[in-house]
Length: 263
Ligand SMILES: NC(=O)c1ccc[n+]([C@@H]2O[C@H](COP(=O)([O-])OP(=O)(O)OC[C@H]3O[C@@H](n4cnc5c(N)ncnc54)[C@H](OP(=O)(O)O)[C@@H]3O)[C@@H](O)[C@H]2O)c1
Image (cartoon, rainbow, N blue to C red; front, top):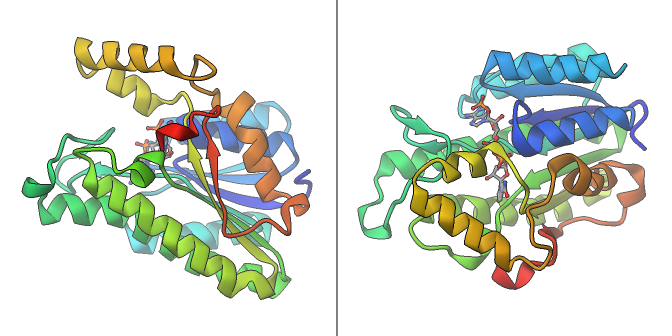
């Protein structure tokens, strides 16, 4: 479905981004695998190449604007253009103390540093990379942008307001860009996932109580499990990245095994 297409996927070293990268490459896309940790970027690139696919590694921090410009430039250099952009990476914590998942942070004690870092690595990174890819997509009259939101933002889960406000800002940006860029053949959609990933694994290790809470939660899920990034998550991403989705834009799609009543 994606033969000849060039894709950038941020946060592709682990979890959802890794799954989307491998699946899109299997569909014929050339993928720029972008993330912070060199070893995971190389691992995913190696998996794709080992299967006969095309991948180019790019180590970057999405919170650094100049690195996003370099990422877009590197994709064009490697594969000639950018057809598909998946804004998936998300930082948590503060610039001095970045962490792997959402810290417990009540509204009344949120610091500027945490709010700024969360938005810089999420909302602003998404905006900047969309801007850097836009000229290439506009010139060719075709583009597919998939931004990753969160059900937590829609629901307003307690004690993670930095994350929630950031993810809802991404949804507002996406709906607006979808309308502004529709005339150029560019679609912009949001996936709100519930998929097994390293961030969930990190949460499980936080404490026995957290692990138990997650186990209890899984037991209440309609399908009784979290989705697998490749088997359950990637088919939607491949569709949204393909020509077949040309009339679908500005949407938020719940990729959560019908657990949508939670959101
Ligand atoms: N899993 C779910 O069910 C779920 C639910 C709702 C929303 N989401 C969203 O889905 C996206 C992916 O989450 P995930 O669960 O797959 O997380 P994950 O397993 O922790 O993977 C996150 C990826 O992003 C990279 N990353 C983090 N900060 C980065 C930065 N500043 N610059 C570049 N890369 C960075 C990480 O690698 P390095 O640390 O090596 O850079 C990693 O490859 C996130 O936007 C998350 O908010 C996930």
